[in-house]
Structure formats: structure tokens, C-alpha cells
Length: 337
Image 1 (cartoon, rainbow, N blue to C red):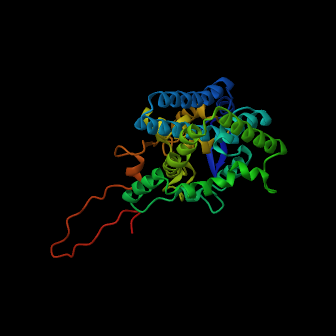
Image 2: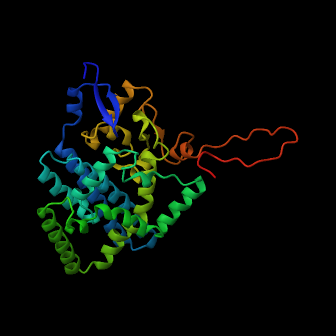
Image 3: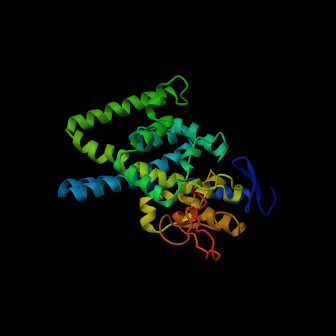
């Protein structure tokens, strides 16, 4: 550690931060009101679109509402990720209580189980012990990628997504090897009983399935596929300063794919103690200190533009004139066969 920076590691690889511990401490300072606003915003948006859809009672509006709710459920997953790093509150019990009741349990997940899973991802980033490597596998062609997204949205890959999420699901709290506490198990039972009682008491089983469960089953898999590939796809063998991707997104893509600055994923791996609302400031500092790092060379969006994720993964191939008399051969991109 010197006055001009400090040493750290990213996925076991040495790396140097372009600032000192005081700056890192400032970036890692938690602001409870920011955190509360992030969580309440997601719930408020869900409530508004449900009321609107119920009032209009038109299927196009209902489907649009389901999509919006799925994006907010994804935002809750991102904030649960903050909870796994104890970035909701420094007190671990308060952090996990809020994280479970407001973020994880409503999505049938557990903060403690996700934490155990996710910390292996950080420790063995892009390596053999990384439990998320499969999420970064790139389909062979752009067409196959888009077909997979359509399969996700049609529900054909829902079971595979549920099996993947089972490694940190709420039911696993009751296994003998669970990292969750006795308090977590009691809280989970109380939560399920309370939700079932409220839904039954108000007679809203249909609405519960339509506006909460179906968005998870139909729209969430596609969102998670895009996010998983965007974070590490095509970078599994990269050095520390580009081992994950940083994306610059507009407001539409932020709403659909990148809530709560999850697009700044390389920055998160560089400094996991920094909460999501401070990632933009962290990104600017990292970019200023290393012109070759992911923060200084962000991918520009997901699907539109020559510097977008889809173009980075599947670059257009420029055909070259064949020599006279040469037999024409097929051309394949870096991910084709």
C-alpha cells in the first residue's frame, strides 16, 4: 500500500487500485436512506402497475405489467446481492432480516444461502470452482442467442432456471448443511404462513399467480440470461483488469436489464465492499487510474450499436475477395462451428 494506491486481488489475481484506503472507506460508507429508497421504489412500482392492470383489465396491459414487475423482481435480486455483502446495514442480523423479508423471501430465496454461493463466485472468479461459470457460456451464434431468449420468455427454460436457483433457494434453509441460522428458518416459516394467510384471506390467489409468480417463471429467465452473459461472457480467460464487464447503458436498458447499477459489474468485483449506489463514483476513479481496465473501456449497451454487448460477442465478419479460381469456403465467427 502506498500513497498512490493500494494492492488487492480480483478472483485470486493481483490488482492495484488507483486510490488509497481513505477513498475506499468513503466509497464503502453505507447510506441507509439510499438503501431504503432503493427497496421501497421496487415495491412501489410493482403496486402501481398491479393497480393499473386491474383497473384497465386488458390483456396487453396485464402482460406489460408482468414484464415491468419482472424487472423490479430482478432489481430485488440485485439488492439481495447487496445484502449478501452486508451492504444494507453493517449489523449482520439487521442486514439479513431486511434482506430476507423485503428481497429474498418474496422470491423464494435466502440471503444466507445466496451469500455462501456468491462468495465462491468471488473467490474462484471464472475458474474451476466458480459456481456461476455456466451462466457465462455464450451461445454459438447471435441467432441462437436470440432463440434462447425467446425460449426463456415462453417458459420452456423455466425448470432449468429453477434448478439453478435451487442452490440458494429458501427451502434449502431446512437442510442439514444449510448456512442459514435457526432464526432464518423460523422467519421463513412465519413469512410463508403470513403470505398464504393474506392471499387466502383476501381471496387473491389468481392475482398472486398472475402478477407475482408468472413474471418470475416467464420473464425472469431471459433477464437473468442477458445479465449472466453480460457480466462475464467471453471474458473467462481475461486478466484481472478485464475479468468482468462494465456496461454504459441508457435509461431503457437500465430499467430492463441493469437496475441499481448492476451493469458496473467489474467495478463491484474490484471493490465488493462498495454499495450499489456508489458504483458510478467508483467506476470513474478506476477508469481514471487505468486506461486499460474495463471501467475505462465500457461496453456500450446490450443490443444496439457497434460497441454493444451483442456486437462484442458476435462481431460482424468482413468478407474478403477470394483469389481468382479459389473455391469458396464458409466463414465462422469466434463462437461459431
